[in-house]
Amino acid sequence: MTRASIAITAISATLGLATAAQADKIKFEYWYGLSGYLGTVVQETCDRFNASQDTYEIVCVGQDGYAQAVQNTIAAFRAGKHPTIVQSYDAGTADLMLSGEFYPVQQMMADFGIDIDWSNYFPGISNYYASSEGELYSMPFNSSTAVMYYNIDDLNAAGIDHPPATWEEFEADLRALKAANPDKCAYAYAPSTWVDLEQFSMAHNIPVATRNNGYDGLDAEYVYNTTLHAKHMQNLLDWYKEGLSEIRTTQGGLNARDSFAKGQCSFYFGSIAGHQTIHNTADDAMNWTVAMLPLYEGHERTNTVVGGASLWVLSRKSEDEYRGAAEYLKFLATPESEEFWSTKTGYIPVTKAGYDALVAKGFYDNAPYKGREVAIQSLTFTEPTELTRGLRLGGFIQARKEWTNEVQAAFAGQKTMQEALDTAVRRSNKVLRNFERTYQGKDY
Image (cartoon, rainbow, N blue to C red; front, side, top):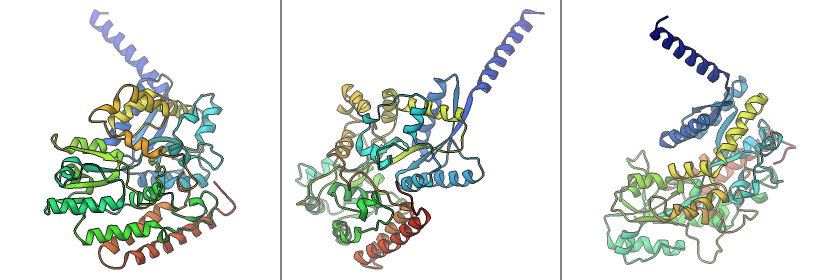
């Protein structure tokens, strides 16, 4: 045998061993909803986990959207081909909870002897995904909350030296901005149930629905058409009619976030998760930052609520797959993984230890990360109250659509804002009643 053939034989043997070792890894699937750049970063977390593992291999499959991730999982479940882990957004929490087709993550970690300090998770985040007894059902992952983005130079040019703390100040600032620069868009707006209804109601400690937003029973009913939310939506409509705001959507050419990022508009409200995207899009000379959502005068601020998604471990899987899932969730819970995720995206750490580690490193002291700490401050501004710990409303994905469709109709001049909200509430309550009949006798 020649030296060359010996070398080839040796290489083949090595490759064969490597292939065998790879084949011996226990594989399990994870379907995620994030897409685009954020989906790419999710895939990177999978690659990092696999590189750290000799026993397990996670196979991560993008589903191009949260709704698709949930819908595809339901379809696959019926065929017995569902993933071990699925990333589901906040709006699907109640439906997944009562489906019963999941392995509570807190229970799973205990079953496999993996020690996690659950008290380390920010209550404003973990409460959203926990049972009424406090057991965490799904693993918090990509977490955010709503903030106000504003152009500092635009405000200064209009004689404004601080961001508005109240909606009354915000309206005055819009008028000042238009007086200083009539041709510029003062406020890039697009109806958003998450910002305009859910986050707004939490910051003001007012209900979205009865029964403590559904936590106390399936017989909850929406009431937002009777709260301060109705006044707020009327104000948003009035400001639009006066030309103080402009509707900015992707269908219209440029959405509200990008309209702000490109310097076309002075204010924008959205997720802190957009912070990195705005930084990447905005001109280097653009002087901007974020602040907490304004309040109406006479109201005390309470914590806002988490948005984003959590990771659910589904039922009907093998013990090996569950052990792999537990190792992956353990991997994500380390401060190193939290730093990787927060650095690469605009999402915030979900644990106090992860946040403290970033603060100690000066993470939030300079661009491009400076300002993201505002989201943590908003989420932890108070201990969650019975109205600010989250929403437990079945079929909430459909309820969001009802709100959006009706509010858009009001902005199109097809009905009054009160008529729109009344209709959205009536239709959404029908969704709740259907959900109540489906899960009669169950609770959270």
